[in-house]
Length: 440
Image (cartoon, rainbow, N blue to C red; front, top):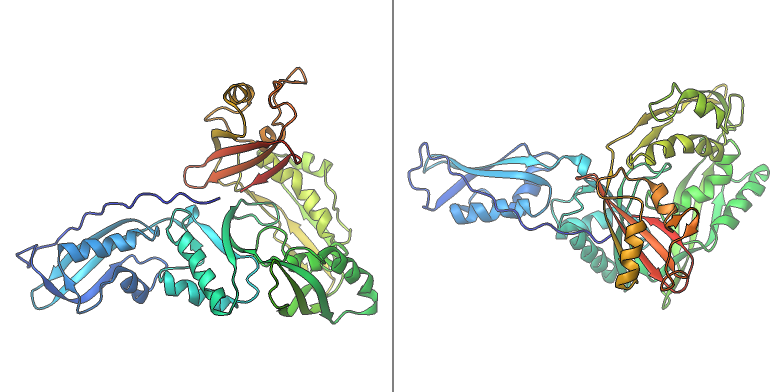
């Protein structure tokens, strides 16, 4: 989703004139003070505001400095005052940082030519106040795109960089703003693993086959390549399997495709069994209902796939009621002597989301009116993914599509706003392709 950048906030600059008589005069700032700086250092805040010891302080320069801080999106309110004497004047910024709960994590999907340190340095050069979380409405969202594009160009890589906001899932229960190289495409061509015992060869062969030719992803959302490599081992009970010493070797850039060779050392660890699974029930799913659908049980091999299948009904019980930020916590406790793991399952539901509006593309006026008239959710209703999966409106099981779009296929996208807790849906109809559901 391309975020909407909010209009610049107009911030009042207030002058504390207990000892300074003329608000419109120019003063030499001996000191710059940032009260309640939140996540940011003095140096970062001075760089962004443009105010340093020795700067000229007056109504115009202070208002401009406050506005530059506001434009980052990291602050809900900023006050600026002059304090002190003519000979010893301080510029004081009173900051109210934006709560981090309304921000998104930032991830980088496939920047195989840049190290994490190089990515961070490139972004800070363009946006000095950057940290690893970001308001979706911050202008930095697009500034980062430009910074990454330039950093790749400096290494001789001509690339098209884009970003998207990915919603929380059971496996990755947090919202993430994920940057990716759209072109050239980067796909896994081969995987070289050290530390593979003969007993593990069948599992590793399975993981290599499943991962080969897939798009490379190292960001904590979507299909993460390292997780795909380890998945057969995790499903076989190697609960602490890990990859170390990972190196990436992209081939010389082709016109559209870049094969990538991954080398790593495998540390499989031991096979673990489940000692017990504890779930005391929740308002959305009772302990008895959870047990009735449970796929993983005490004494079983600690199979990651079966663990996710066990948690899925609990996760969906909340999502169907609009809890899109729900986190199902397993709190694994490992006994490294007995090689067992205990799971204590709890739920952090987050806020409940409601439906805001539906937008349709690819329909004429009559078809759009008919479609919207039969759409189940109305503005203000609790949002449920079930309304998306049942997107063909029916009456008594019979589709109500009229002839102008009866045979067309739809692609859905859902946009959840973590600040307002409202969801916008966009459905685009086309003449070809299959129905798909994408949540962003």
